[in-house]
Image (cartoon, rainbow, N blue to C red):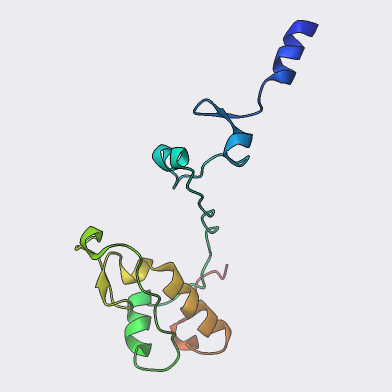
Length: 133
């Protein structure tokens, strides 16, 4: 490579995003949940949490929830952030008692159940025949 070509690559910004150097947008490229419009507005996002591996259950998360809903084991759910008019009416979360997502897909409820299992509760719902993560 000629010295002129190597100078060209050394002086070039490491990453370009929509015509801006990565340092102009905080040095990070957007994750999958960021949009071009929000980047231009300067909105900052937190990174998505890493995928979690949960202890395998012998029944669904919704079934575990229905068995323990009237105990004092679960904390009160955090209010849903999305506007009620924008929520998916085909999906219902029994934990929130609201439309918007399925009970079985709600990560925070899964985490609550996981904590209870690790604390010695709900062992009867653990699938002992499955490989543990």
